[in-house]
Length: 438
Length: 86
Image 1 (cartoon, each protein chain N blue to C red):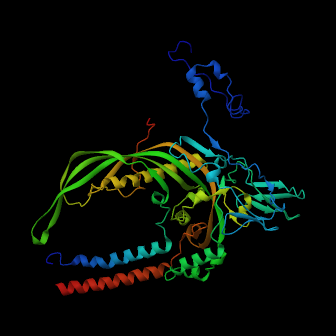
Image 2: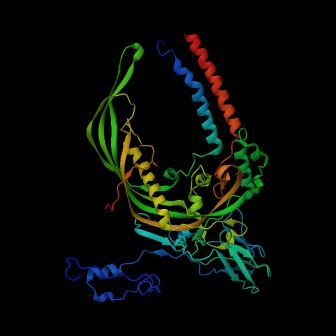
Image 3: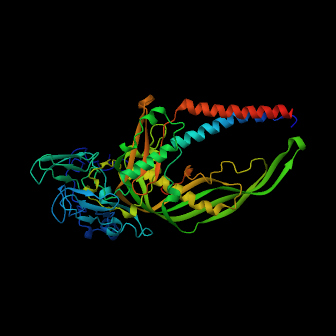
């Protein structure tokens, strides 16, 4: 070994001995050598601050019983149509703190550097179960909450309500929640109105089974992202200089002359509160397999009004759990940021009246800030049987703005018949014109 | 109306049927809808900068617009130049 020109690299740490991931990890920020003894450049690097995580954990709330600040009862619910919590026992009402002001989420976008992750948006640890059990502090009984679809549960023995409030690393507890403002009756009316406009060609079974009262309120997991980015695009553009016709009367053709330009554009922008689905299932917008694009369409929400997490807001609603980490969502974020950049530069290329063909694009992300949030959606669903498990059609109402979108299954033969009839009539008119013209 | 005789009119029937079918299908199923984040998100942009350099001419073409015009197709990705190339 000693006579080879290039020295062999030091041996890698073994897969399961000391220095491997099997070892007990060192304390965060600890380093085996005192940084003060190292050269300045190394010391600076070691002592530079780590990416900031905004701590949104609520010290005053804990897992299990959370009592009304006035009377101490645990039967706390969200008051529909407001951001208030109400105690069902003494009717005391109180407000959750808006995260926008509490953690400064709305400010400093232009100075955003690196990746800032709020504590509720941290990476999900694989070994943390979604099923959580507590000892009820009211009576000592064991109470289980399945965080896949609920964040509160009632103790079967003493009837106290227990909630999950501590930010366990299973992705269930977000930084903030946006409570429902649209009431159920309103959501039902909106769904009915939406479907009433789409009855003629709707699937017969869908119309027969249509019961919008079955709509359910669901809190869906999202990452709300702020970003400070630059986009560069380059391509070719053409400006028409002349147009002229050639040929005789029966065979006239129009020709164009154009100048070709190389076009480059650069734009710096900040984006505020871009919502991204943080569950793999909801983020899959393949319209051949699902209708999740319906739920995607009712975005955005007034996320500025989101309040600090309190499980009591979810009492009586169902919820879905986040299963994507920041890094898994980054490709989708970058794709959307590039799209935004392309949309921003469009106003600067109007002089290219023959259009622009963009050929290259570059995204530079200076900084992003990630906050996980539960957003309120009223969901009505209808399962259409068919190949590959059929299709689940959603009609969704934004729980804050009331924006409604839906997928109504169609009766194919009716739609085809209508199209063919129209086609035949048009063809008949065309034939008459040809006969009259010849 | 001599040699082409208006025969293209025959295409009206199938074309009309197809257009109507897809228009109605999309109206019911809304498969073409998604979050319009380009305009529905709060964006604060600095003025756009850039350069325009004439590189040549495209004369005598019959096309009414540049080939592969994607100025309005924001979501259609083109070649991505990465900062950390290599």
